[in-house]
Length: 542
Image (cartoon, rainbow, N blue to C red; front, side, top):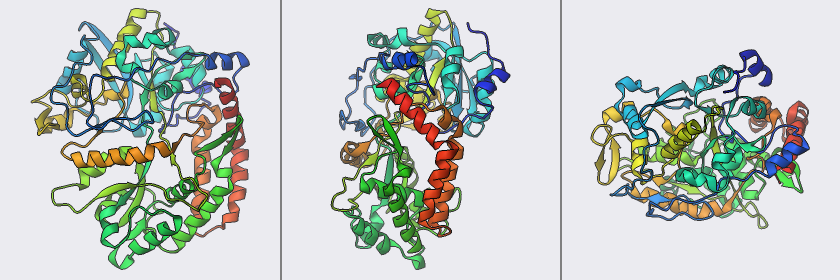
């Protein structure tokens, strides 16, 4: 067991700043300004072998490019993906996780939680922190004796912290070793790559899918107004925006000017995040394409195609699109089930679909931004007890069992007849389950996400059809699996600088030419250093 870091030492390592609790890759290929030997160590790390789980056959097949598996119902006879209990019933493990849903009742009053513990053969004690408090709480957790599992989402000085406090899992997971944990072997290499530090594998990635942001469109409204919801050119896109906007009917084309700016960049086929050429990095914000996209978006704002409250913080755009106040919004792919649950009621006219970016001009090759490969990483407390490490990995293996297995039902729904009932082939939570099952065990380990809309198989088919067209268009941000210490520290500051300047231009308070001055300030305040660190990290991992 390693000696615990003091809070003072931890904060010194972390630069005295709070953790940036934002979604995105949490661990990555190497540290800021690494030595040549460390770069070589990271580039030589053998990732866990990828063995896609074949125990459940989806109704709609996945693809090698990354289209998600689709299920029209939960399989009638769920398979046992993990036949043996991970523990004996005598062990206890602890976990610290960020909680995005209401804190559930404790295990003593939570049959769902106790059932998970019983199936694991382990008493799993969760320390759940609301997402709003995670950034403040994590430094305290890291400065003491770590829990067995700790959820990490972007914190400064990760290489040093991992070396001091967390278990190097390479011997247990690299190459074919991961086959002892088949559900972890079911995670793609790009997710595992975000866990490589200090010449080793330091954690379990919480995977995300290759589809990223979707341009959701109320196709029922568009068609009722006589327009095609799938424009093929930028000019058609502008005509669509004009045609659906009618302030007298309290309806506008868009919410989210930044999202429209990004959509126009996708129409142009611009790089995503950063452009990498021969190891040299250029931020997309520095490109002339971005200035053109800002100028175009400003014209759309001036034309009145955006909801009048679109620049308001926390604007309820999900409500707006559901009520038909706006016709198009950008949102993450994970929002599709939320829209289905909220708006696709019996006899509802609402029909949503994803819009693919049309061509900006004749020479453009539109693309889409690929989703980040992992949301967070679960690190394991450093220990010399190899059997305990294997126990923790068996627990993670159980929690990562995919859709269609008995274990997934236990992890996500609870106990049948208590927390959920099967209705027409779909597990539906009971009122008791609604309260109890908010314990987010999948923050410790998770399976690849499925496409599944209980009670709405046609929506699942629609989502799958969209992905078949969209996923081959996705382009990854080359920085997604790299680590920049400066960006880890200054992420919020740099992003706020750019966001505020963009808002000023789009609202007509500054001209488009002022973007050049903004980029100069961004570079001086950390952008150039972020670039340098990404280039070093890239060199060390390729």
